[in-house]
Image (cartoon, rainbow, N blue to C red; front, side, top):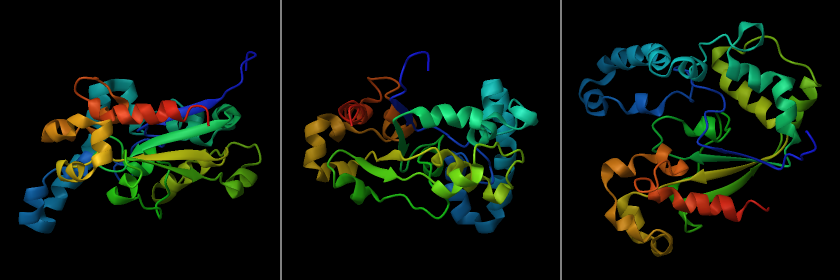
Length: 251
């Protein structure tokens, strides 16, 4: 491409397949809302959550405008008037450049991310489950590198063609994930930021992040910002993720 060789494509807590209120890649914080009320009211609180899920695309479109409509898959910016993210996941015009990279890496928060669900950022299918906190912290720094092999079957079925139809809602997530994985293998890095109790057990974590003992509940819950180190002073807990990214650039 213009005399340059694409080397590494890296994403951090990225909603690769967008957000659909009816899919596992819905906004996680919608599931967190009303926890106490739901325990008290049971199924009687479900209509409230359903209403919140229904209006979230409209609120998102109003709050962040075009980006919001694209995130919630309500736009018509893609080819044939379909949502842009669906088009990008299925159209060879976008998949071919992605395939050109020698290495593709997806960093994903296993839990605590209020904006992007693990299934979306980790390119995980519905039947796949995330690793546990204990699994991840066996590495000592809260990151677990795994390999996602390319979806050969999807790649051969595509045979260079663009799928024109929009997948059904119940299969949309897996369809888009399989298409993105058809370009070749991905490295998936599952990230976990420990609770204060867990952090106190991890001497190796202390060596990397000695301030973990000063965890503040509100700041500790900003997982989406931590993994990107949006603000170094507030999101210092994500510095070990940056270190991991830099250390693995030459793999």
